[in-house]
Length: 258
Ligand SMILES: Nc1ncnc2c1ncn2[C@@H]1O[C@H](COP(=O)(O)OP(=O)(O)OP(=O)(O)O)[C@@H](O)[C@H]1O
Ligand SMILES: [Mg+2]
Image 1 (cartoon, protein in one colour):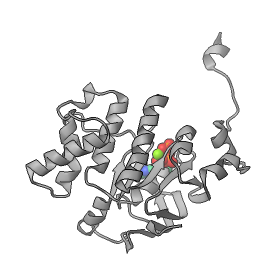
Image 2: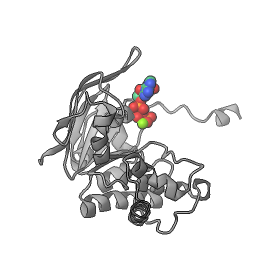
Image 3: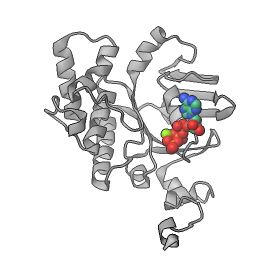
Image 4: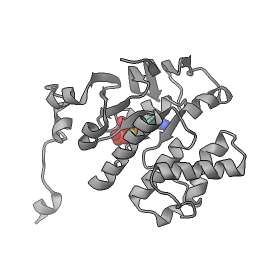
């Protein structure tokens, strides 16, 4: 295995009395696409938000590009935020801003002021996500898949070394989900990006993952290749691979009412 770009050690996070992360140890290797799996509410999004320092560890450390960022203040964090772009769960675009303003937002945050540079970099990011010339559209004029791609453009516009995607496939049809997968692999292969993807879409896992990590009870329960995942006999993973929630099927309330 290559050198880690991000190294997480003994990461713990608590919200009130809820102990969400209970000692996560994880290496994210430079240039890989890592897929993060786990049950709903298990702490995947919380873990992801620690990587660009949007959340502070309660215990443990997060190293980005060789530096422990867990104790840095907002100003000291800025250069690390530039290295790690994030596409949030639900894609959250600003509805009152055009596509161009949405994508330009992180550039303004990192202090790019030159109007021509902003314009060029937004155009380049929209090319990458295959939405060229859509600058003037408003989010309400876009389809769900287009909105995801604008959110992706916003995550990559600062040319980060690593991009984090929180459920980029949610709510998309299989063809649009495939196009997101192609973009993710394209960023890895042609732009050298390290990708960390949270998804529930098994189809996508097998399309994009170099390595899979399964989070369970606030810790890394399993790590392996997609091939190993396919063959696993682990009783916790098996239902995920088979697309079975593991919950007993109780039938539809509408049917039972009739
Ligand atoms: N800022 C916060 N304040 C309080 N509790 C939080 C906060 N963020 C997350 N939680 C709680 O932490 C737990 C883990 O949430 P998280 O969003 O990481 O789950 P997840 O694994 O991403 O789930 P899903 O697959 O449904 O997106 C949940 O119980 C959630 O309510
Ligand atoms: Mg989540």
